[in-house]
Amino acid sequence: MLSDVTAMNGVARQVPALDVMRRRQDFPILRREVNRHDLVYLDNAATSQKPWSVIEAERHYYADYNANIHRGIHRLSQEATDAYEAARDKVREFINAPRREEIVFTRGSTEAINLVASSYGQHLQAGDEILITEMEHHSNIVPWQLYCQPSGAVLRVVPINDAGELVVEQFKSLLGPRTRLVALTHMSNALGSINPVKALVDLAHRAGAVVLVDGAQAVAHLPVDVTDLDCDFYVFSGHKLYGPTGIGVLFAKFSLLEAMPPYQGGGDMIKSVSFAGSTWNELPYKFEAGTPNIAGGIGLGAAIDYVRSVGMDVIAAHEAELLAYATARAEAFPGLSLIGTACDKGAILSFTLAGIHPHDVGTILDTQGVAVRTGHHCAMPVMDRYGVPATVRASFALYNTRQEVDALFRGLAKAREIFE
Amino acid sequence: MTADLRDLYQEVVVDHSRRPRNFGPLPDASHQAEGFNPLCGDRLNLYLKVVDGFIEDARFEGSGCAISMASASLMTEAMKGRRTTDAEALFSDFHAMLTGNPKTNPALGKLEVFAGVSEFPSRIKCATLAWHTLQAALHAEVQPVTTESIA
Figure 1 (cartoon, one colour):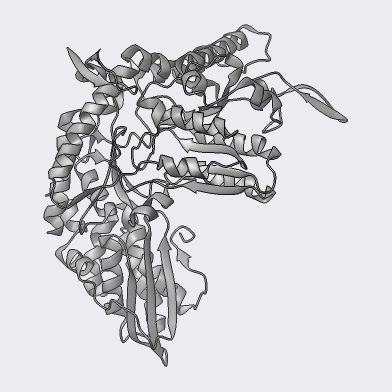
Figure 2: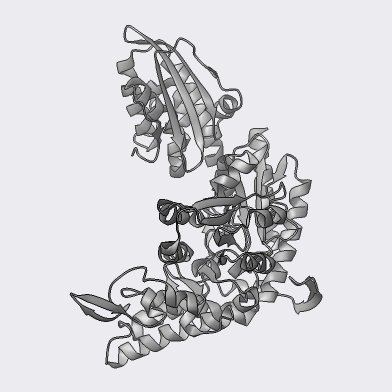
């Protein structure tokens, strides 16, 4: 079976349909019941569920070759090092980075942004500008405030329109001679909006600024090619990509990483240490102080193998279809207001129901086995923009079905019944 | 509808959430406090008029989920005419019921409609926001209280 998809470049082509019932077998948690209902997990933008292969990869490491890496002469250490470094190669290939030295493992997207803000941010001076957008997650706002504002660098914010799309004209006019860095999300966690990153990177480069792209959401939903995007930094987390928590990635261009001072000091990041001073290890280890999340890295490698075996374009097409179905149902649902209606949008449905607080909706859905996120989604400025304290957010993954979307709307009907 | 859900959203709760009583400012308030739950954005201002150790009037303004609004509404009703010292004891009984020991307490009167909250641990903070704010108002704390800093 084939389904039509329109790729990012606007060219329609055909990709094989995703066999969702078969894929659901890969995720053990989907067998469980919640409140005497089959689990309907629609909180994937918070974290996705894990396939057996990821769970098994972690178990295998701990059960069969657990050892520290990069330092032991013994067999287990060598095996662990090989598996961890193989995961780095998988990441490099997955996002099409030119060099493996450009892949730094972190705890997640948040730590990766903090790393850049702290390290790259050190050469910012008073009056330098950092450009972010109104749709950013707190983790792409607060690190810049924390590390860059003390130096006198100024944070400027590109607004979004009512649909939740970045206003590109404003982006252009805010890019100025003092703009040193642009930090923006590839796909908004609160709205689903997908930004035209490639074009924005080009504009920023022409203005002489480097660009950090927050790919925490995007990486699980669309093919990412950092060479094509030409971004300077790209960050993402493992756990939203069907991988473990506590592991994430910073991609950064080699020349930038070389020039940047270390983020944390400790073991593994040094070449030599004396009380007079120390020298740093080569890339990427200069940025990987201390024993890392070895099992997490290996698990992330397994997650990448998994999504590549399914096909990122196949996943994207499946989710686009689900989102279209859910959006049509949402538009027909009385009193429902969609928050975020961008033309280019990932598998996120954020909304409010007239007269019913999102928190109450979340509780009622939970009694029906439907897991959604309710709240400000760590994007308080987005909530302010729309004048709501919170939204209900249903977010889809490769294993979600139309039947599950139907369960969501049955739950919403129940909420209306209670508050009628 | 599941029994649990109707236990949580009893008709009295839904009614008070949609038509909160004692809603609005209190110009001659002697005590006031602001309560905020940063996780869900619930926010309320509570105003008390205390005379000779008695709460003569109690009103509130704010927005939030059904549980937090209904709780504030029913609490202000319950407070009127009470000694300030009794308010603390009532909160202690109310909190005990929300955490399920005991599950019911006739001494709480109308406030017993919140007994169902004990089955929904993530909603206890919603039901207690108004009460934490009441404590802050009575102790005349200047800072807004948040449910994150109070167990």
